[in-house]
Amino acid sequence: MAHMLDGPVPDGARSVSWPWYHHVLTDELTVDARALFEQYAKVPPKDVENHIYRIRDKAWGIFPWPCIGEFWFLSFGLAKHPLYHNLVLPRLKTGDSLLDLGSCMGQDLRKLVFDGAPSEKIYASDVFPQYEGLSYELWRDRDTFPHHFLADDVLADNEDFMKGALMTKLGPGQTDIIAINMFLHLFDYENQLKVATRIIRLLSHRPGSLILGSQAGVRPPMEQPLKPPFDKTEDGETRTIYRHSPDSFIDLWKRAGSFAGVPIRVWADFQIMEKKSEQYPAGVDTGLEAVASKKPFTADDLFSTSSAKRVLFSTEPEARRLYFSIIRT
Ligand SMILES: C[S@@+](CC[C@H](N)C(=O)[O-])C[C@H]1O[C@@H](n2cnc3c(N)ncnc32)[C@H](O)[C@@H]1O
Image (cartoon, rainbow, N blue to C red; front, side):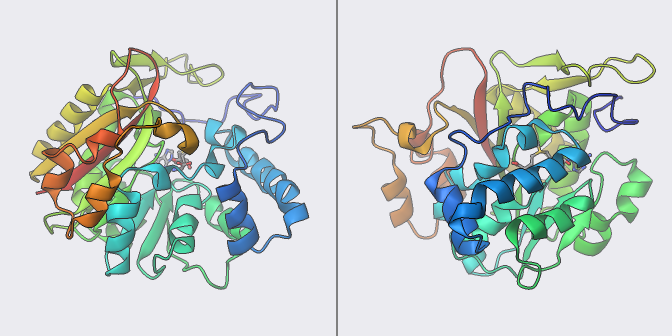
């Protein structure tokens, strides 16, 4: 099955004329994002924008992902997940390990460390090995951030995947938390199932181990052709991706759980709004305090009470951000 990384990058794909290459920062550099550059990366305030433009253009030269062109890497997707503060951070502080799969510029891991997570057991993995060096350049932490980058291709054939860095350096059944942000939606259905099954195999055998993230979603779920110039392979084969609704996403993971022979519970829902300031309309009980007061946070909190769900709202049919958690039971 053809996918985006099959074959050479099409001619002109790195042109800065594509609409997903934004020439200037507008509201992407939030106060929170700026804080990370100034306080974590120690970039002088007046240099922050130019620092971002310079490294963003290097990343565009590696591969012209929309998340690079649109400065999505400044939005720290993991930190917006409803379980970030209540579950992910506390568990890392008590010794859990975390893998960021499809880590790109490594921003979610730096945000975790900035928010107090220890860095010893956090790992990044991406198909492009160049992101390791570029992340150090962006975050200026080569001497302090662990060199835990595993270059690997989650779509590799079985033999190569078994010999790859994820399986040999990290190993099956080892990782307590696996973050996949803006990742699975890059693939067609068949490849999503293959990758989801591999992710479940990487997950720790301990009940409560967690896979979480967010990605683009749509209702009803559908296969979509990729946008030009990635819509066709050199041989003229059409490239497609699969966009999920919460229900189809849950079904995908249940199938992957059965393939892997691992018991899991899956939760997925759309979130109405992207911007934090708009997320919780006045008067809405977010449920976060109720969640925070519960120790320990259990799988039941996520699935059978409304606590996590109350921060999220299913909405009308259209493209939305889909948030999800998969817990090993
Ligand atoms: C859209 S970016 C998202 C990056 C980041 N997680 C975020 O939320 O901004 C997807 C990432 O997945 C990586 N990726 C794509 N195909 C992959 C594959 N077959 N194996 C491993 N990583 C892959 C890309 O290189 C890219 O860094």
